[in-house]
Length: 361
Image (cartoon, rainbow, N blue to C red; front, side, top):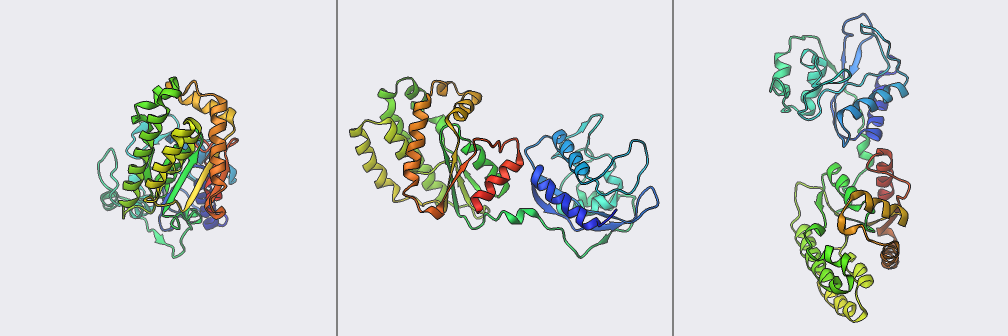
């Protein structure tokens, strides 16, 4: 009903804002109303990448329908509507509850679903029949006419162009969320992901128990590993990826070492660092995620790494001060300091998108 194309576009935009990244959008097809006499329908299929569960996606989709003005009437039978959002598949999940059935039970009998679905991912296999979309389209008994529109829906993903960056460094204090954000960005924007290998460092648990004894071997081992990882990861660029996203920058080594090492040790460490650092590329944008100390301590507690549980607020503050001292010397146009103390970009997609907008601003 109403301005059908505009309602489709509004739905696409809101799905992107609240559910996930819109990877691909099919053509728009006009088809006759099915099961009742009414105005022709416009249909399309979206391929969406999301971290939400199928049940959460369904709940969000129904909320979008309601927000757009759809009033779902109780009872059987089809009728014209402002918008209708259906879940066709969630990967290869097979699920049946009172509110959700996956794959959608009627899609094999709906040409207006199969034709745009075949455009979006022709080789995707139905997890029950094991037929791909091309085969399902060829086998369907629905012979209704699908008229392709020449007008395309706009993908809101185009507003988030990360192609101008070859190398993005996401930094922050312990527990700030840099690994989670780097992983999100790499997943959504086809980037090569470089994650710090802190779990493999045998000195880290020992350092938290006895900082004086293990600070120097810890920082030296991190220096060597970060140098080698960044050198290999950035030099061996993947032609099938758009850019590189790392959850640390090489200067992290110097910032932490200044806090943990004695003066003589730090002076020696600094000489070694600068000898090695000249071989490494600098990030196109340096993103620093700021969280207040109370939130950092809460995050550290919640993620449950035993060796981190005794970290004190004073240590976190020194690290934070070290980062800000370093950031002062960077070109202003390359640095994005983002306060995420009141944001939860893992659970709230709008928070996540607001961070992306700040990076791109």
